Length: 138
Image 1 (spheres, one colour):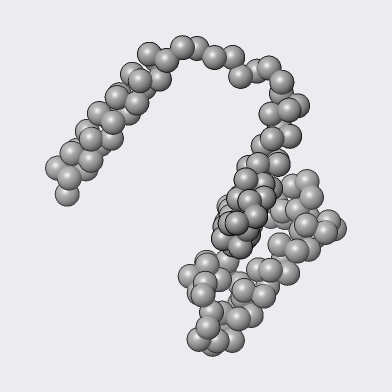
Image 2 (cartoon, one colour):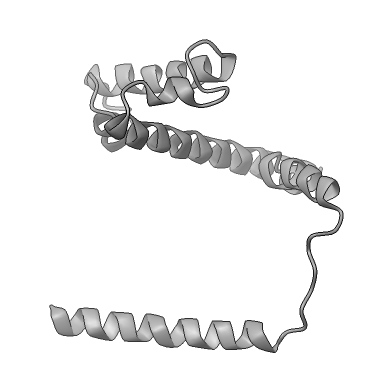
């Protein structure tokens, strides 16, 4: 088993050396200009998925991709809050816009509650039993 790990780490180190070498050969570029525009594009293209949803001939696949992306983001946010709850009781209440007093916190709680009720009601159509059971709540 340790020989497999040594080989795996060696392959990883070699690949990283190749990638870092290629990055060092490229011309340096300053990306600290136009910060407000870049942040706007992050929200518009990255989070809003404009390039996928905005194309008229690929609108439905784009919408489906955006929904999957936003669902993954929601699960990622919930994972962070659950890890924080392991260290600080009431961790979620300290995060901006995610506490139970905010609308976004309400929607996160509502969607996870829906997932839990479907998974623990012995519903065979439940698609996320592993995620629902990992929340530790019934």
